[in-house]
Length: 102
Image (tube, rainbow, N blue to C red):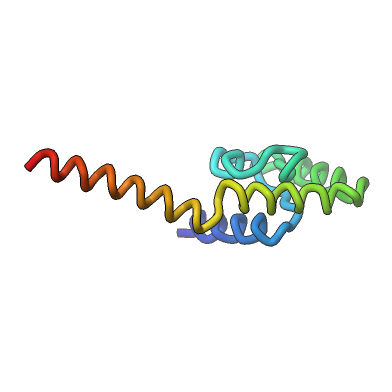
């Protein structure tokens, strides 16, 4: 449950155009491109987290760039409209297979 809440928070932050620093986990790599739409750090490493935050703070322009890329990613690949359309196609495929097997 905790990972689901954290992932939802990450998705919301990306959609709002926040500059995100996240641990380098597969579920985060699915959403972030390191240095483009977010910053990833080695999971469990405080030193790596500090380095990632320092990199962002050392180049203030990067905050806006990361946020804009994150917002663009969410708008073009992860919007509710796109998600609903994907699920609709999936349901249609499943229903068509069910009808065909009758």
